[in-house]
Length: 99
Image (cartoon, rainbow, N blue to C red):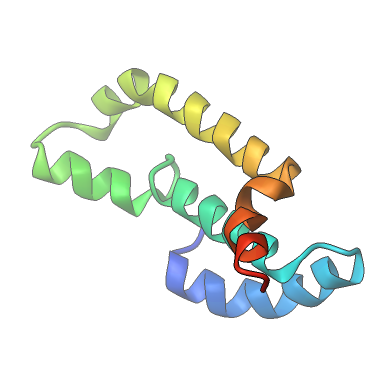
């Protein structure tokens, strides 16, 4: 949540991928929930570059956007938890293709 996506991918992947492989997480599954986490971070407050860009395009204050977006944040969090804890969802296509 505190970094932009591109630097976070470069920095954190090299740290967390070996750890996740060490505890038995599939690299494809790790990549999917890692990127989903970073995407959620771009639209949530504190840094939320996507949130700030959206507020500038819509000519609205960020403070006025937070409350209406709370149901969407809850839905994104639930989706993130489902994808993280049910690896069959993110591995379906790779298993189907035999990868």
